[in-house]
Amino acid sequence: MQNARERERHEIGPVFWVSAAFALAFILWGVIGPQSFGAVTQGIFEWVVGNLGWFYLLAGNFFLIFVVVLALSRYGKLRLGKEGERPQFSRFAWFAMLFQAGMGPALIFWGVAEPLAHYNSPPFGLAEPGSVEAAQVGMQYTYFHWAFHPWAMYAIVGLAVGYFSFRRDEPGLISPVFRPLLGNRVDGPIGKTIDVLSVIAVLFGVAVALGQAGLQLTAGLGETFGTPTGIIAQITVIVVTTVAFIISASTAIEKGINYLSQISLYLAGVLLVFFLFLGPTATQLGALTQGVGDYAGGIVPMSMRLNSFDQDNTWLGSWTVFYWSWWIAWCPYVGLFIARISRGRTIREFVLGTVLGPSVVTFVWVAVFGGTAIFLDRTQADGLAERVVADPAAGMFLFLDQFPLALPLSILTLAVLWIFFVAGADAGTVVLGSLSTGGPQEPVRWIKVAWGLAMAAIAGILLVAGGLGALQSASVLTGVPFAFIMFLMCISFLKHLRSEARGGGLQGSPGGADAARAREEAPSTRRAPSGRPAPGRPATGSTFTAEPLPDPRGDGTPGINEPGTGGR
Image (cartoon, rainbow, N blue to C red; front, side):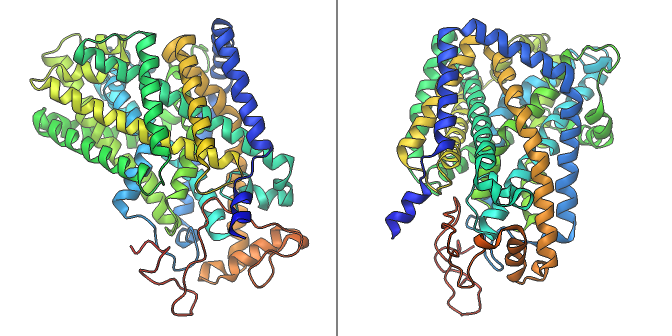
């Protein structure tokens, strides 16, 4: 019986084969004709930026408003799981894993480079380059791109998938979230199409991150040890990183990703505290205070600003549209992963942890590193901004060269970056394996290895086809279709919450979710009162559903330290 259940959870069906065929076709195209591939993706990128920039801006605002309103509403006390269920991971372990999955290494990549880039060339002519006003604009826009908006996007997918998986015992996929809108059609071609698009978005989103790993680690090694930084070196770094995360992927999440995430967060904290006291502390704290204030006061105009009349959206496409499309492309990856580690938390706690918590860390990180970099350029390292803008992958290491302990600091930064990349790619293989095989909690090893190799191949092809520009283009392309999926996801999730509220779910009654399910499913697919699937409906085999929780007291509430409850 157990073996049959496991076979069902590892379904190698249309989603896997269609996604794998797409990945293989893409890889072959990139190998046979990298120039034509680069030209096509760049052309589509320019069209999206020129015609859909407004759509991305509105989408980002909608997603942020949606999660904030949801957390503050009466639905905020609903739990991602059964009533009384407790979280599996401690708050620190939970935060470490969600932060590394969401943007840990990317923030190191851009934490110095982006403030200097906007300081050197302010957007929309808002200030004179290199001026005090330009420094303020640089901090403000960096906060805008890295704080609330991206994490709100992640939270939508994480909330919806976690809620349906843990509270409704659905498979841990994107498609079941649409059952309130589509009914049992999510089990057919429509649902499979949604899952295929999700796999493609994850594949390219993580491949872009892996490509950035090749760029930044190679640049860091070159600045620190004088090693080559060309395409061969970049591919070598990707291969080494791929071997490491495939080895890590052979262990359970509770061991591999959990331990790596906590180690990287501790090391990043050491780096942050060191520079907080080594650098111009008063300037850093002032940049933090003013930057957060400027961000809060300007979030509405920043999130709606377009060059609507002169049609020159080059800056917008290189920054805001790129970021928004990249975050959206990452949403199924980060969303499913943070759903997997968030069982037992309420909607309100989830939103606070995934939106507010990482944003606060972002504020401090950018103030310490970005603020110090601008200070150095203005006072004692004239030309730092130009050098970083010319080679953003090396930005962090060019910054470290300005300090007396440059070598050990650079080695520490390389270690943090590499561990972040390994842990993030490891999580990517788990999500890809789960999405493509029906939703197992731990996909079989060869599936994870196959997707890991595909990610590495695509990352290498993108670097050969055009470096950082090709990585940005790929992010924009995969983000477009999933943005529409996320809009419908919000509608479907809200519809289900209202349905559950009518069934008494907000008062802690277990009948709320059951009543909502009964209204959404056809009679032939409703669950029998015993909790077993009714005749004609297969077992769900949720990605994130563990064995039934123990009930030592007989009152429907799991024991505090019983197996399966996390004991926290």
